[in-house]
Length: 105
View (cartoon, rainbow, N blue to C red):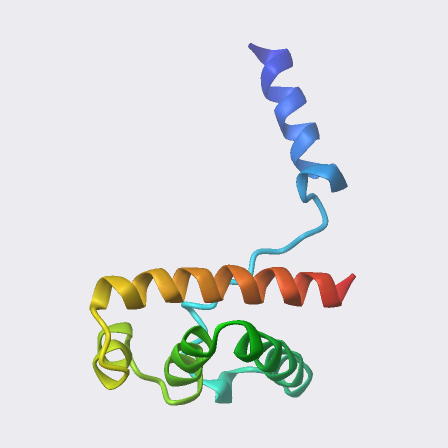
């Protein structure tokens, strides 16, 4: 059991397993005012790319991040079901996270 736990701990620190990456929780960042200038510019560039692929997801991110709306309020503003908004939000967060990580490398 000791070897298993040690191997798992070592594996977590390897680059292959994401050892150098840091998790960014977009749910905790509610308003653009709390974000640094460089991060805000990177997010805006990534959001522009997302908008070409999925305009609804990009609009949802804008309402949540820049306007500070809750997911329920953003869904109502976009006239979509709350569950659809949850799926769009999960997709947009994952897409933006991947894009921002790609740009950081």
